[in-house]
Image 1 (cartoon, rainbow, N blue to C red):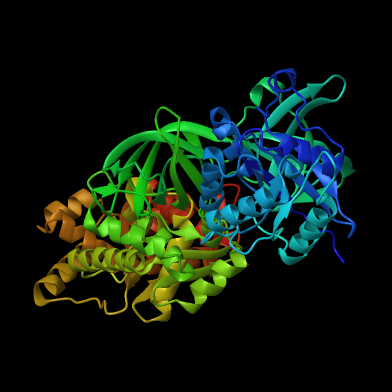
Image 2: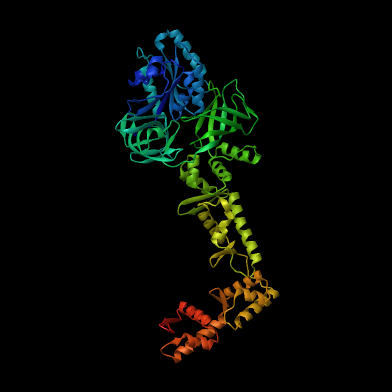
Length: 637
């Protein structure tokens, strides 16, 4: 059977025996700091592990119970799989007991055991009363059916039963998936001489190996893993559900800070998130704009919280909020957070991130709030649609997978099954997704642009080239638009909306239409060029002598070129009939002069200037009809 990777947390009021019990179970004292020893309470997070009879080794996070250290407690609670809620038999349920349980609920901890500590300090009657009180206290919570085990670290009462219940619980909890983005908040940083920087944390998702590279976020600095330790032992791999120590190279200790996150890829930072927020404090009312302490992972910031779907929020109510942060953080869809009062003396509530990169809802526009409500509903196809609807760019399935902290294969499956609402295009790099609205708007812009171009240029069979169509995206143009436009154009051709003409795209319905006036203008310009005494005609002479407006004349010149009536040589126009005559002259001269044709011979026969004769000969050279050998030209074999 594979080894489980799980983390157990301890919670409860100060001095209810959490650290003492952990020492009795593991032999390790989590109070390692001098101040903790002096004061007799846990201040910092303590970390150890428990080796079980099954062979599993469970990581342990010992969290402080004192009210002054709730922030530290929250950072430890992030990422735990189950909790031991410690309640002293002689004191019962206390303020931090209540607060810790609420925090566990808000952080979506689903499993746990209630431990009735210091059982040796009370008689059996009081122990029974304490058990009844606890049963009532945990009613309607995730601990409602959890075992309540009286223990004593002094005389070892109940320790074996507790270990057995932990074994059962570990067996019942599914292993977290090692797929997806590797993320680990840093909760401890130190250096060891000769080894370097060590960071500790709980792995939230994904997996990594020794020698892998990681990014320190939000700074996006790259580091390499020299050594991994899991539960104090060297490991080659760690994954979601592990407590780990990483020996990192590439940065100095002062470049690491608590609250930073390590990831195997770059994740966009944010200072604004949309969330579902639940208030549990009975005496607090959240107004439309509030300033509170925001805690997520090992991050603590003072945040402004904006209610989106109501004017106020009170105890036991859940609402949609936008949270504005002074500094950027790294978070993803589904992450849980806690909020505390601005004086940091009480926990107010908490919730779940539903959008790590939202639009700014300052004016609470109804359309924007509807998108937030759809995302909050939580159905995967709705979440993907929500991501696309708020984006001003097409998105790759890999980007959405990171935003939603989901497996990309799952995103692709949902997108392809909902292709009426989630427009998807495949290219060599994966799947590009657009909202139905964005796809429709891009196609409409393409067709409108081509319609106007065809209307202004009725003689041109061509439309717009790729770069001209790319200009539709204006200043918002990014690398994603290149493949997106290629795929959309291909789709429009497949559906008989566009056609490819030379190196341009035109409307399928477009036909070259020539009215009587155009026909007359075409005939005039063609005759002028064909009869030109100099052989070559400059554009400016054509506009003036033919008395045709320049824009129309240029259109006709392009039309005549498309009809193979004209050729442009060095910017001037020559009729193809003149070229045919010139080629005939060349062949006649060379056939009667086996040694080759001189420039002067050709000039005299064509009755033109030396320069024009030379231009013509160079044209025929380029067409592989003639070849220059010294001062004469011969026909190319």
